[in-house]
Length: 429
Image 1: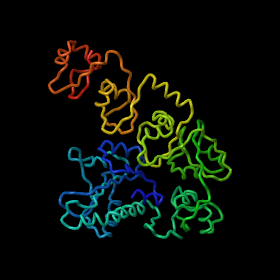
Image 2: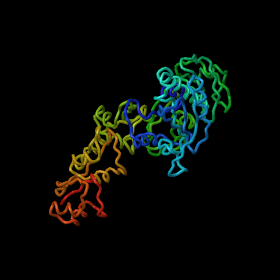
Image 3: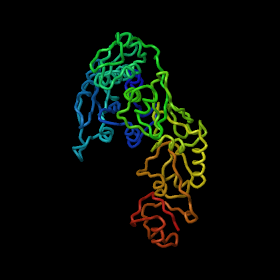
Image 4: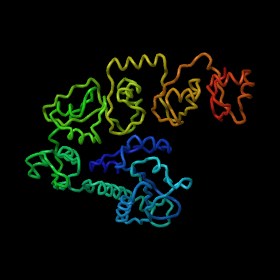
């Protein structure tokens, strides 16, 4: 589905490209940074169980059933049975969706697709093996039709397909979508200018090399889309469409693709750029370019360690960024989260408390991501004794065990109450 969406020019993001397990928090944290508005669609793909047979879809309480019905109609055309499309409410709060993947991805239009039953006594198990690709294509076609994209079946000859111009389209964006040149579209439609209108039918000629290649520009302080467009002999709309910008807001360090008119005056940037590949982490990219994850995060204004395949990163190669990071590591250690790590195991490794680790990294829950860069707070001479709270412990029993006062433990651990949690790490004075 991901590859097909890309083929059709539909902007898409995939949560993972390998057979890895994500817990509910990881799934949501991966999805949410990519949600920009209610125009986005979240598709959660599943196989069902429980003795039934056929496909069904759960859709969000905030949405109607149009997309769900379109998908099931397409799946039915492949020969698969369909059951129903429905909404499911959370028993404890009927105003909320039952499934977290739908509930926590607002305002996107979120659907959960159950394609078949693994324990079906009818045809589902055989169809899963034989028809999974047809089902995936059924979803792709429904989304394309629902969003107004020109749908072309896999392997279909794209010569002289037609496209209906949508609001915000330009000849450049249409040419980019169908991998053809602007001049090819103009010639096929006898256009004497680049002006097009919403609702206009365009003939899209067969795939041809683009007559223009993009150049990359890194936004500088004081830039605006107008100033960048003016300097590069293009228009604000061309840049906005080429970069899928939802508004004219840009930020320092942002990487923009600029239509190459042959008269570009793009200011050269001293930094390298890198397109994120499947399996990449900030740590692996930093090793590749002899820099640090922290330096990459700073250069790209990243607020977390999540990367998406195809994302463009600026790779710092200047002495200043490396030097700044070195100064930091002299006074504050960093640690790259490894598979199997937890806040508890890392706190034990460095002889610090979980709370100190969370506070130093602005972590609000216990979720860690492989490749995440953690700042390890400097240890002082009084933090060598650590104690992990066990069942039945209280501050008094622990204080007695170590021959210290309850108040001393309270102060050293910044405790605001005497309530302890099993597994909590305490510094013992």
